[in-house]
Length: 155
Image (tube, rainbow, N blue to C red; front, side, top):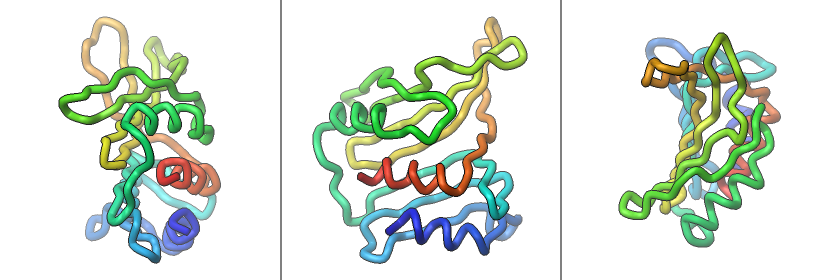
């Protein structure tokens, strides 16, 4: 399974300037996962972004069905997710943390973009009232949570 292959490769890989991302494709070649880490150790990773893309897989259901399923299935994050909007012309759904976490006068939240073809991006952002801009921030996942999120994104 993709999550097992990813965790096996992640255990023996560390990001550097020559290889800043890790790409893994599952054995039958149905899905590809890209990890953009800040740091990796034997327990987990600090990630800038996680992307899962279908190679030969076809996601089940409409984009709304896929997004709602993700909102209920993804439980390995600090906050649960909710569907925020679906942009039909661009065929992308946006999910965010139900209750963003307060931090230093602002908030931090997860954001998932699910495209109709199954491509899924996960990131974490921080914003402060009145600043108008959000900033991408690293987020930590244990290897177990990372594996579960990859399974949730591909099921």
